[in-house]
Length: 344
Image (cartoon, rainbow, N blue to C red; front, side):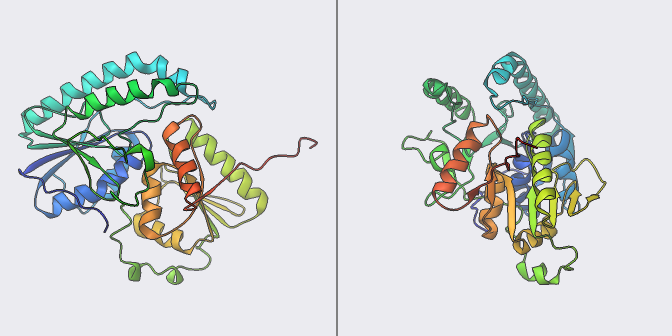
């Protein structure tokens, strides 16, 4: 395990991941398991697919209570530019952050919470409890055409970070994978690097040797689909069409844990979700991996030493930066949607 999660005092902890894709929830799993293993009373506050994922993957872990905690609603546009879609939603988001903060204060008061751990939720803090903020992008990247706004955005994010007692950066301080997103000369004083977080890291490789998988079930290509809608569905369709055309035996993990059905379509097998042990085995046994350049996915691949063909979510500046940064480091390669013959 590469992380160095700081010790948490007190007996009752509320962990609140953001529901933008599944990454924020999945990277909180090692933290939740560590706290539960220490005998803490852990409350999990989440919503939507993130809450479903946590309930499924923490089955058997001693969790005090799962609480539906609404936050910023994620909705991307179908186009490549998300900037105006985000600007239009700002008033709604501000209201949602205020309501989130009120709800966290209520939970802290009613449950006697000692510590609140927020993964990128701006309103999940409370003066009556120790408040911890998790982010891998202290220095938020602005969209193309809005680079002039980065100092303003970073100042605003810095103000949010200062509301928390501690800011945990899930990356290595040296030779990290977040690049300029967190490796800055003047980080806020409450920031600390805690190493990468991955739900795959603690799975014993001897328990999931890829050679033990039935060859009929091992895919040549594994595609991990993730992110908010509608871009998640768009990416799934693009990958499915490309893999259907090239005939490779492909496993597509759709990132929809709220669904149960597995579908087969020729050389494609589409599953809504996959438990960590099976996922790790499939990734280690695959000849090719395709995925978004979401940071939590990058941490999972880093933890098991797997390289992938990566494709950023259009208009998501953080993923666009990571795709460029990690391909320049030659850690991963870029995946491009195959071009169709315009004559057909």
